[in-house]
Image 1 (cartoon, helix red, strand yellow):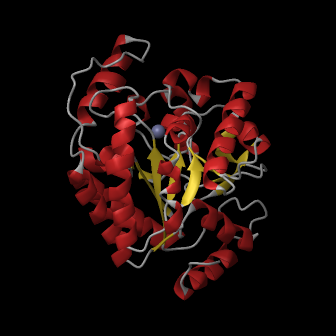
Image 2 (tube, helix red, strand yellow):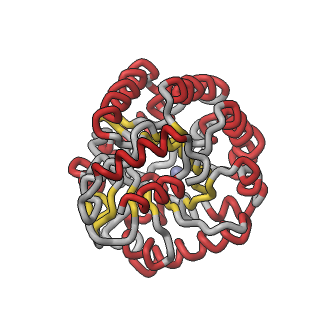
Image 3 (cartoon, rainbow, N blue to C red):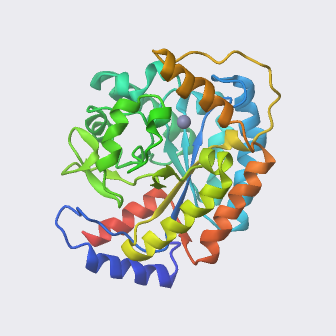
Length: 336
Ligand SMILES: [Zn+2]
């Protein structure tokens, strides 16, 4: 495994002894491993909705800030790109290549009307194969990792991913209980029982272990999510979450998987666009559209970069190794 220190290789060997179950059901994959994962999209946190102008800022401002941070800590990361955005600005994909970061897929579009949890199997296959081809043509590398926009998936998603050649998914956040504030919350109830360590998924449910050749690398959470949005909304609680996750990893060797967006690291003027109503009923509208949008605007831009650096510095100081999704899969293959 290139890029892994001797210490991490030793951890991997140890984890291989622990993970002896045939389907890697209670897989314990390498202590001290940290995945820094970035969802690259044109969503405007300040103004709501998808905006081409936000996309330019993500390219010119958000991405360079992230790339600087990762270079400073010699960290390899994974970038999940929305394919129609990458098609508009292919440079946003190419700019990560010299650093050895992984090019991954965040779907064809971030339009909530075409979320994966409302699409048929055929529609999902079409979106995934189109997106994969676009990203592979731009990057010249095989794209095998996927994260669904807004972590919205359904019973067809495992099959659609396997049929289109994906090998890794990261759309499940086990035991994360903020789902009632997010869209598609009903299907996210499956998160409550999802395993916390990486696992191969069931045929019709990404949140259950099974026999499909698709590795789930869950997004970290400890009741509350361990993601950029929550880090910005509630930095104090986030420090506690991070400590709890570190303690858990010491016991279970579960990898850390932090999710952030380059659009959190940009400065945008407030155009006072009306919050688009996406939710069906009034309560859901108040919680998942209005309140959520208000909270999500805290600590954006350079403040988000400073907060994020504290996260990275914490894991770095504790001796964690930063690696990509693909590298994680390679480690797990050596265990089976
Ligand atoms: Zn997204």
